[in-house]
Length: 470
Ligand SMILES: *Cc1c(COP(=O)(O)O)cnc(C)c1O
Image (tube, rainbow, N blue to C red; front, side, top):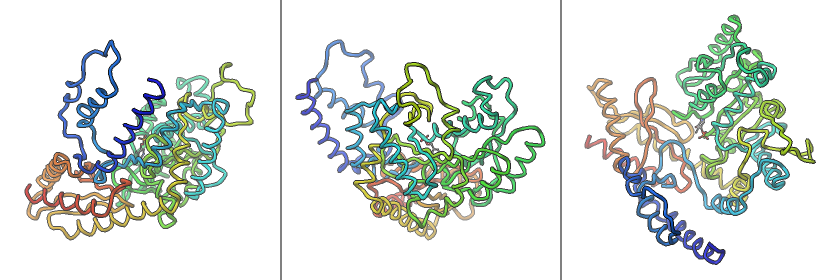
């Protein structure tokens, strides 16, 4: 494809994208295909001869699109958002055109220095300690994995990196049952096994109980087990619970444990001063992670990972084969030493575009609307017969279930499950199931960039209608 053809085809694609943005509301939110349906339409072997762009686009529309769940649909209230703003898409086009590998400062000084500047902007936006350093990771899972490795190395004086786990003491990692599964995965990948995970009891708001944490650490220390790390969550995936950072920070410090804070979803909203109290005490953390690729509109992938002491992280992950040595040495940041990957995409440009073209006031207005509409939704749920608000709203996340007089719990739970299946098969809106105290509930999370208050209310009306014909 020469540049002339590219220009023409790219214009076609831009037109398709703009139409998609305008028309996404007309698709069912969750793809309605059956398992294997997309695969069955794909040829078993690749073409020997080059095919035409027009044919390919036609197949994209016929074969691929029906199998797409529309994350950019304004009635996508499932999981957490993976927002794509137009501003971010424009940056992503430039990023993809340059195809930079930002592993070293030298392999694109602008990528590294823009990343440094954007991490400083984010610190300013979220009111995080100015002395912290930041790096962009692909996902929060990777950032948490780095935190677990750094905690493991710090707890053992960087010995595991040298001699492996055979000679390492037992270590313990504390969090709650509300924590994201990425912690368990990280601990397993770090070679420490699930036996090293401690789930601290939570209170009625699903937040870690500091006194229980303290007692568990003490018990471990008495048994010769090192309390290596505590992970607190602000805005848990299931119900949006927030752990008390101040109290946990004090306990972590007293036990010399590494303190990691996961605010993957809720972090973005912390740029609104009225929500920032949820991060009180974050200044005592060793690391902090949030995902601009969720609520903030910086499209996947873009995870902001901050650390109190860069040397702890870099010493844990650094490698320096001869072919990676550069003249600049320690005068510059080589971000390849800050994460799992060697090769890294340039992601900072997306932050730069979104922050400059939306402005902080534009971003804050979106978070405030989502939170306000979720409060309105909670009021509606409370006044609708046949439903019970179970948790929240915590920021823009709540959970509810079916409540029928004279029915036992098992029957009600079965109705809740049945309702969710009907809602998602219907396609008008898309919601997620979770468990609260062992019972199924339906999560409703407002966070898609194009969502309006009418979308929230229309989705709720559809849920209520479907409940009536259960
Ligand atoms: C989404 C989420 C994660 C995982 O995010 P990835 O970027 O997909 O790895 C971790 N923690 C919390 C609280 C989350 O909501």
